Length: 304
Image (cartoon, rainbow, N blue to C red):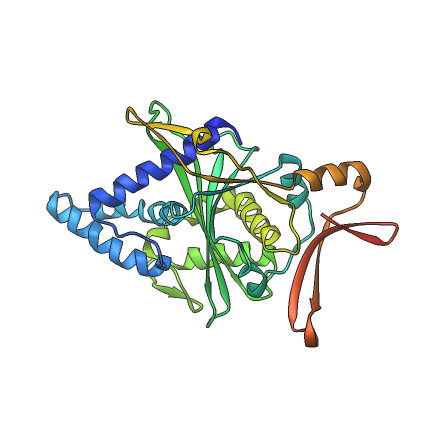
């Protein structure tokens, strides 16, 4: 992860925190997006009335999704820096089925992933939440990049996604776009609640689909069996210094390197072999589903 990628992540965190405080948004910790959206929309309407600016509530409502997603990340400040070559390996794999019981093994449900293949954005915040009754997994994704002409601001793109149990990744991205297209003026589509602040998302969803795919693949890998993840430890005095609005402070982030050794192993022994996902049952009574990311060589599976 570059210093600029980290700066943008911390800038987004600082700006959304200011927004939450200024407009009275609550702390998102422990809330679902739907719960947070309801209380935050009341704050938006109150602000518009106080400022005597009709329609301002819709402008401000666009801030709810990043305020929620980035605010959740603020609790742990976990960064998963996926090796660039490994990111490409994930994106080149065949389709994968999404299973809630596997994703529920994520070490954390809020994290930041640096991205390396974009001119406009250099990272994304990912939030994962589960509706066990409906067997639906929701992903809140906020892409962030530098704001032109301002060192203390950022640009963002919000990309929500939903996956039903055993739905393929391709089906999940396709059906999410359909949900959002039908959501204008509706509160619920096919049993899935869609906050009103997302009504304008479909117009940009096609451009953001690769990032939705990458975010879900990264989450699936982190929840898989024995992922290649390494914590980058540092002493307190070596924590990054973040300067915002002229004030400097050391930030306690939790940075992990992901897929570096797996990418080296694949380059050494697996080139020409297609990495793929493997699901299998294990444990007493074969009741526990596991997921591995592997490649095959001479009919023998190798774990990545």
